Image (cartoon, rainbow over all chains, first blue to last red; front, side, top):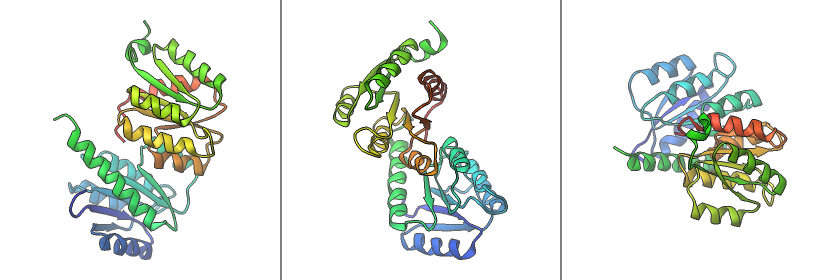
Length: 134
Length: 133
């Protein structure tokens, strides 16, 4: 796990994004916040590496958070991708599975469980990178 | 040799399901595609097989001995065989099962009642893509 992992939190509810930012900063993450899919796509395109991208699904449009996940999936190295939603459905989770999203948390998120899952997923990612052929 | 037989020659699959008939059906269908298959009806047998073989494909029932134990096994398989294609068979494609699939690192979820040849065909097509989750 990086010393200070970079995390992008995407949520159009300012209070939710702020609370998540406080939680993850207190856990040592360096957090960038976007309040829309459009803002998130700009931040993902500006060349900065993120270790974790956590996105809401319903923002400007229903399920538009999948576009954030899709853009994050194309980054190299690929970040851990988390969907945090209060509106999980067979349709959007089916798409998330096809997109190979790493984790789904249902709002209100169980924070200890989410933090534990992120630690595990980032450790696996770091391990995979360090053991992959050069 | 068909294209899929050539692609999967010398590859191994693990199928874990409590129903022997289902296991035999998967083993036969995978064999037709050139894949050697180890089957297990319980967790100890599955874990023993994992210590003895390297699996590129795993198809696991979401319920082996008790409700949900297949999800745990699927998660372990994903971590033990990082490039493996792991699929789970569940009674329904609903929100809880899709959540479990994503959070276990599973590549695909199929309904229990899906025809075995359809599941195998889908698995073989999807497994040809690198599993980089």
